[in-house]
Image 1 (cartoon, one colour):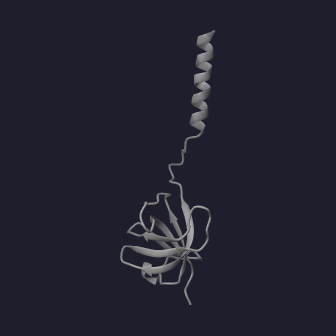
Image 2 (cartoon, rainbow, N blue to C red; image 1 turned 180 degrees about the vertical axis):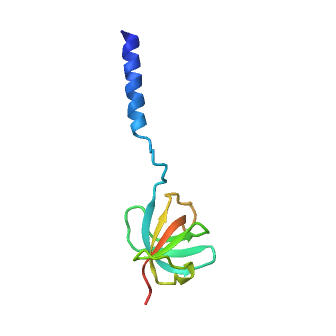
Image 3 (cartoon, rainbow, N blue to C red; image 1 turned 180 degrees about the horizontal axis):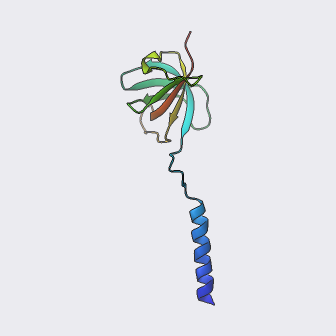
Length: 116
């Protein structure tokens, strides 16, 4: 009887843990909105405009060949079109480098509003 109970508990635990697995294979995405402070060859310095309890202050947003750039209406834009004062929405994988300022690697940047 003890063996049967042990098997039932083990199977139940296995099924519960299997239900928690991410089967999509898609990485989680994290976002924040910021105002561009400066643009450099390897990234963007920006100040976060909305404190969401996680992001606040200045961030260095690293960009690369895999970073996608869009306008707010979903059209692809050139990286070179991003200017100081633009409001951007940054999508990244959740990893923040502990540096000053903190750094993230952007997977997607949406230009939410152009500077005037």
